[in-house]
Image (cartoon, rainbow, N blue to C red; front, side):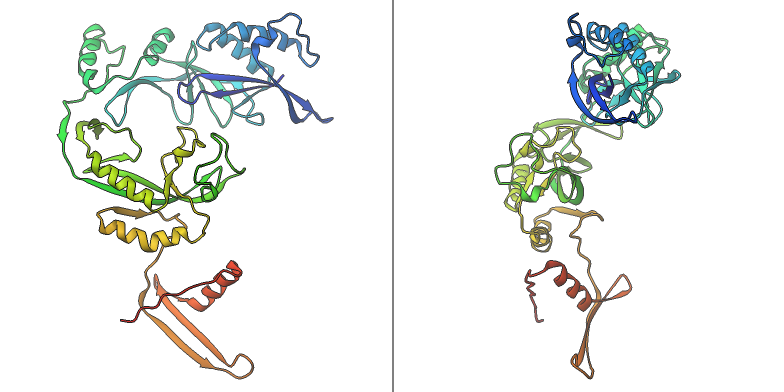
Length: 407
């Protein structure tokens, strides 16, 4: 019975999935036939023909091991690896093998809000697994093994299981740990000074970018699809907007829970940021009125997804983003917004250098004249006639409209 192992999203725990696979005549797996839970094999009456002798020894022990932070679980994990039928992260992922111990370092991770939490560091690209004895995994090769530190594994786990340490308590906890363990065996929290008051005027910031999503936001209904159900399969390359609030050098993503006075850290220094709720609400309303909707409102992407707080244009009209860039972005800039456009954004505009050149050349035959219409972009002359003809051909029957202004 194959086993798929994967890392817990936030805690660093280890998740073991069990599944039976149908094999082809050449021994390769063709498709999954059924999934199982370890406790299903505690019943002595369960006699599945596809179980191997090693499976019958491992599965009841896996169920009895309970949570992964027991030493018996580590022993079962080693037996799973020894079967040669364990994969990392997916059923066709790398086969699991046990590797040598590697060195790890226990330190404190400092977050943007000034909180701290103990973290076990290993060399990249290894990932840490919080077992009774801390382990690592190489997600590319499937190699797994123990992590060695100067501290007992029980003490390492106790440190890693601790809650977030607030900025207000970091100084007192640091002093107490230095007093109790003067030799530095247990690393104390990072030193932070008292937060400095920061009162800056809000400047909304808009970044236009592109990303791959498991759905196309342009075709979402106004109310969104069924909760948690992507409306289409595969990945879609889409345009997105990232809205953030800038207070001086401090940047907060739009959607950050509001706190009138928020502790933030920058370059190791603490600041007490005083936020302007009315200004943030006005800026957020302005964006929503332009047709941008934050993706977290549709409950499709997981909360930890990199783009869950970004916004999309919920409009099937393919020119909606072009209208936004041409008409709405200049208005936002006039209202004090800072707007950046990433190179990968598909609707980026460029300014020609010099005047548009226009020439008509007479010819004989049916096509009795040639039209040449060109501009200079980045030192190169671009023939607009060819570009427009290509656009018309790609758009089919879509009509193009031009707005001419005389000065």
